[in-house]
Amino acid sequence: MTTLVWLRDDLRIADHPALAAAAEDPAGVVVAYVLDEESPGARPLGGAAKWWLHHSLAALGDRLAEFGVPLVLRRGPAAREIPALAAESGAARVLWNRRYGAERAGDAALKLTLREKGIAAHSFTGGVLFEPGSVVTAQGTGYRVYSAFWRACLSNSPPAAPIPAPATLIPASVQPRSDALGAWGLLPTTPDWAGGLAARWTPGEAAGEAQLERFLGERARRYAAERDFPDAGSGSELSPYLRWGELSPRTVWHRALAAGVDAGMFLSELGWREFAWHTAFASPDLHERGLNPQFDAFPWEREPGAELLAWQRGETGFPLVDAGMRELWETGFMHNRARMVTASFLTKNLLIDWRLGEAWFWDTLVDADAASNPFNWQWVAGCGADAAPYFRIFNPLTQQQRFDPSGEYVSRWAPESLLLPELVDLRSSRARALAAYDQARGVAPVGSERER
Image (tube, rainbow, N blue to C red; front, side):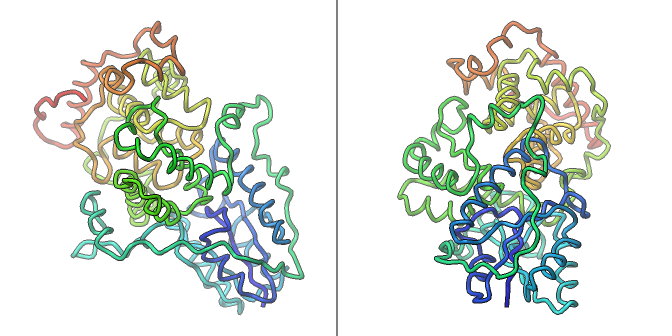
């Protein structure tokens, strides 16, 4: 019986449970990717994500061609395209790896539709270490504090070992019609703003594997000590490969342990990603609604105009903020320390709604996924899970002194920022933010916390 494998955010061959199961089918496989930005729960991709997706699909198509299997591309609602693909190929079963955000209700409905048509439908663990819903409190609810969540994860059985790539794949004798990748228009045209992305990144599974080996061989030993320094070059830079499923978190986990380096701090970052996905599983509207309802009444500036534009362009007059924002625009990426500082500046010094910042990152980051992007924005804004005290405000000048003391990061990305007028007064804007937070919570003003 022919098997249809439905790809989503798992654009790889190795450690792909659905593809591994399909490889056992002597009648052959159809491998399809459906670009679905229309179904309920689907969030249209940002520009940087579209650029990455184009090149990732091209790389995967080349890899599948080595097995003699074409990559079938279709665009439209999955509820329409998957049954059509099964009918066109005569597939007797459809396999996929699970998603854990807002799309999962549609996936469950599609599974029922296929079975009603006499087509077997099965799903497998997706891009997580532990299945969401399996790590819960004694009361059966999801965790809201990371340290407790991660302890619970580590007390379980370790993540399953990754599945080797199939040795062979048999192409089905009947392959469905496929769109041309270029016809999807995922790449920028005029102006072509993606030159900096192409200079920094090579999408695809092979590039992800190479980056993992580079990190474990060259950077991992420095990671714990230097990871907060934007110009140290000790970050893993694996996040886009994890976001698109070109690497699985299980592969990263086991490879890091096998490398024999002190992976504790690094693996805890995988744990933070895991925490984001488990949270999104329980709250699929994460990019629209704050997890802490106390802050629903917070007086965010929702039509900020010039201040938001200055932040987006890296023209705030605060060098670390501007450097981070310009690195983002140029490369589709920003160092994690800079992400926290730029997000804090937007939400707490400018009082601009975190959703506007999250939307900008969604459009410009190559690694923005439906869980980590809004989850981290809510954490910084103070309305999310395990939020650091809501009154914690990152001082961009202090942060620059601590984490870019030589000025190399600022000099690389925004040297002229030193000459720009500062967009806001840090002291008075901090006081304004604290007063607004206290008002939203209905409590007396908090005591002053030393600026970070």
